[in-house]
Image (cartoon, rainbow, N blue to C red; front, side, top):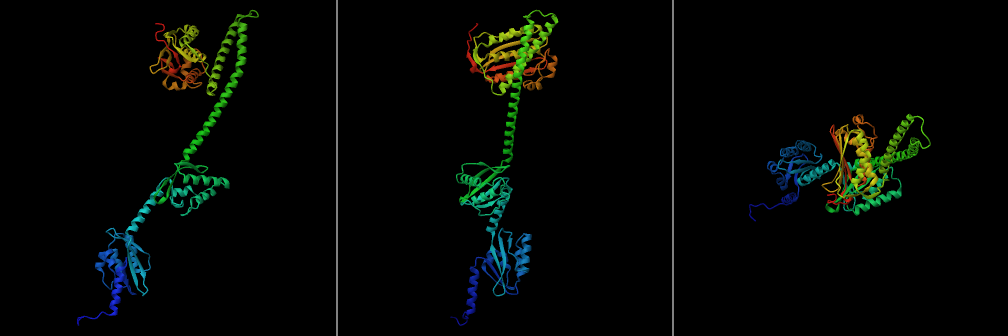
Length: 507
């Protein structure tokens, strides 16, 4: 050993040992004596804050050190709390964001030697992670659907505010198993007090959770229905999403109730009309029969000729009323689904000619020209004979009724371009306004202006009956018109109703 070298003392060894211990610590340590004067610091301080380490020297007060640290941050609130820590070492820990992005957790602890230790910890990762978690929680709370997270064992981990609102009056605690949560939920529902029903609900809900196969609906109360979906997440957990569909389900419930009421009302109306019509037909038939008997003077001559005129009016009025009643009966039977077609093979052109001959005298009296464009092609149609005649009669009667003297009515038939068979009735009458076309297709729908020009009144049942009868045949009925120019009514029978067609017939 050199004579000029001093032999290390025990105190020096102890100081070196203490210095090594301080440097080995994973945190920055600044040691102050009882007077709050800086006595020592370790190397970790320089790593965490090089600028601070460059300005340190023994004797600095705790307040000065805190002020130096505050100078490396732009966060006013954090620096304020740090400066307070320099005055009150017992204050809470401070998270100080530095300008370089580092976040230091700073806490002052009393030492066993009546001094203080200022502890600096790098909290950058934990702060960022906490920030991300807070951001995620904020996003979850802002979601308009109820969210809950279950761990791999089916225990509640977290939930958002919407879920809390959905499970009102239910105690939500982290770690609660799903089955216990379901029991709590059912206990909070006033309409679920039956234990057996509760157990059935819980068992079924757990089955859906363990055997999840897709979204399902569940009622969370008498007026609350949700669409529940479950999605696996990392670690074996499950994200449960409840989407509120109460408005949709309640609207569906109201629509179903309204539909039932409408059906009941329609059934009652149909039954009423059918019963009344049936009761009226019997006396009407008697009235018509007796007037025909008297008009024929079967039991002797009528003394006054004017009585015969009155009887003809009675018979015509009774016949007209009977036709109306029969039409009402047909419509009510169709509405009730009780109308059946007596389908036969017929030649439609022959039926049209028969109806035209029957109504031709009425057209002549009205000074109307009746044209028939019925090519004899040997076409055979499968249809109800009575219904076909009734439809042609209704359309031709309307055309005669609403065509002024000197006008023309034309009945034509043709094969439709897309397949099928068309019967058309066209007139040069007063026509129908576009806004009134929908109205005249409804039962009892009439146009006042048309009735003012008509020589006779109607009930507004003819066109609706035609449409219903065509629908029974699987076809369609269309009506087009130009006000003041005329109307075109078209019946389209589907192609499958054409039994036979000979294009060479009649050539």
